[in-house]
Image 1 (cartoon, rainbow, N blue to C red):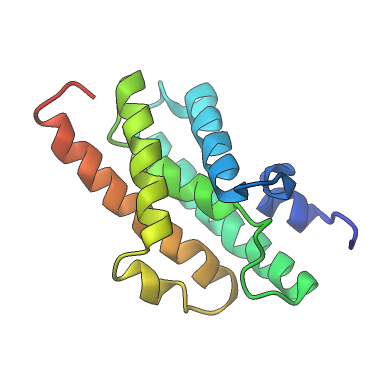
Image 2: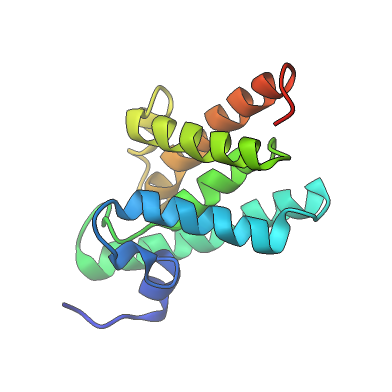
Length: 152
């Protein structure tokens, strides 16, 4: 195993990506936890800026880790799940909503409906991040629509 560089530490969300099984689910759960601890009571614009920052840091760290490991999409890289689930959480306001956002994001991330399946073919860290950002957008839309009928 290669050493844990700063990029690998960031891209693995402080090592969550090294855990098995299901590092993507673990990374998503970590993302929910960080969102609830740091962002949940912040204004929407702050949450959006946080998503943008996580995306930028994610592209850098995922690219560096991918190159270091000579792997196009290393399973230990889960910062893409963090950024994607943060997008889904933008529409949730209750514990039920947070759970629905998490589950919806995981389903869309696994199924990769168009254009997520195409987005993952972008080069390096962009492709690693893009499919999860699309999945987060789909989950956001679903949570928002459900929130029109139920308080989530």
